[in-house]
Amino acid sequence: MKSLSGHTKPFAVLGHPIGHTLSPVMHNAALEALGIDGIYLAFDVHPERLMQVLAAMRDMGFRGVNLTVPLKEVAFRSLADLDDSARRLGAVNTVEFTPSGLRGHNTDGKGFLRALKDAFGSSTKGQSMFVLGCGGAGRAVAITSAVEGCARIILADVDPVRCENVAREIRTLAPEVPVELAGAERSQWAVAAAACSLVVQASPVGMKPDDPPPLPPSAFRPGQRAFDLVYNLPDTSFTRTATGAGAKAVNGLGMLLHQGAEALTIWTGIPAPVEIMRNALEGALYHA
Image (cartoon, rainbow, N blue to C red; front, side):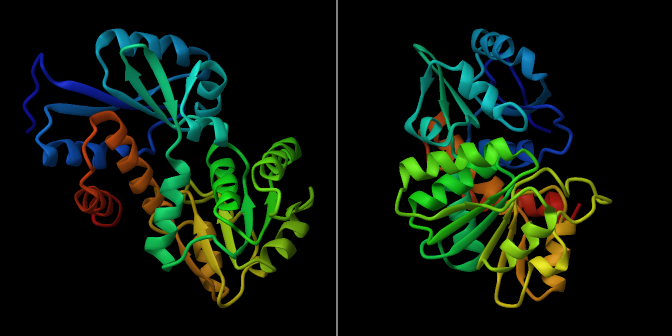
């Protein structure tokens, strides 16, 4: 059992809810491997309390914090000091405690690209993409992919305003990339997804085992790649539907891994032990 003392450095992930998170598994394995006297915890924090809690954590000596749904955009709107990644992506998933205060970063974009390379051996460059869900993580995926040279992006969300906002950002940051909105009808989503080479599921649907699939089988086809950002289940309703229709599909464990590794390096200045973190995650999800 890990020995804790008054010198132990605390880190944490905040969300609402937070029970699904696997971040403590990989970060505690990494801290041990690096020989850092630290502990990584998880706390449920209501969005209205976020900034008060972060200020208290700074005063208590926390060394770094990750943010998940629905806190990423709250932090973006509330933090005065934002890294280029957070400003570009419009969300904060990593908070660094600096001598001058709280600094917001976003490691989701890098995490997605590295996970995509791991899973499919490719990037988003030249691909046609369908992105379902334009909240914090979906926004990061869409904008990062556009900047990387995606050939075409189609956006869908139950909230059309979110789609419009992300489309506007893409047209500003990557005006050469065609961006379209899939429309409000779910039947339109399936048609749009089927026309793309890469389908990304960035909505919360699928976090529960009995969640219905967010897209029907007609949204997928052989030769297509499907990426679900949901990571807390080995197989989600999305990945099962995609593979059943002949697509190659993965869950979001790889993105969790790589965004977390980037965050750990921001906090410590030390390269993260990625393979140790990967093994810890896979052990918790697939062999628990």
